[in-house]
Structures are given as C-alpha cells and as structure tokens.
Image (cartoon, rainbow, N blue to C red; front, side, top):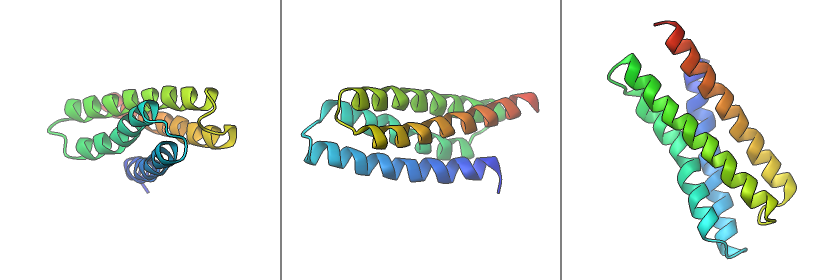
Length: 118
C-alpha cells in the first residue's frame, strides 16, 4: 500500500470521525462555533488530498498537500481548544489528536519525498 493511498484512507476515516464528533458537540453539548471550525478544517484534509490526486503538475501536487497540512495543523488547534475547554473528554480528544498527528506525519513525508524527487 502506497503512502498516498494510506493518506487517502486515513484522511477519509478521520473526516468521518470529525463529522460524528461535531454532531455530538452540536446535539448534546450545544456547541456550534468551535465544532463548525473543526468540521471545516477536519474534513478539508481529505478533500485536499483527493484534489492533489488530480494535480496538474508536481508543484501543484505539493501545493495542495501543503494546504492539507495547514488544515491538519488547524484541526489540531481546534481539538486542543475543545479538549481544554471540556467540550471533548480527555480520552476522546487525545485519540482524535493522535489521528491528526499521524496525518501531519504522513503529509509531511509525502511532501518531502515529492520535493526530493525533484
């Protein structure tokens, strides 16, 4: 399984987790502002990876993945805020944060490898 395929599958699974988490935050906790931000950034990661698959050039591919990396970093921020504020329980927040960090590592590796190949 290639790293690109892993990124695609992991980002999709993560996006589904984010959607379910945001639904819970909105329906049970009545938290709308931070959950909307998490929903936007957390689902954008996979969308940008899919977009990168159809890149017009190597530079376009790297650019789209760099934006996905930024979205993953932003997602990490929203998860941290939601956990520290008590909207997400510590176990759930840490688990989602671990998934985010894994996506950050995968995206960083793909970008570095692509740039090194010139």
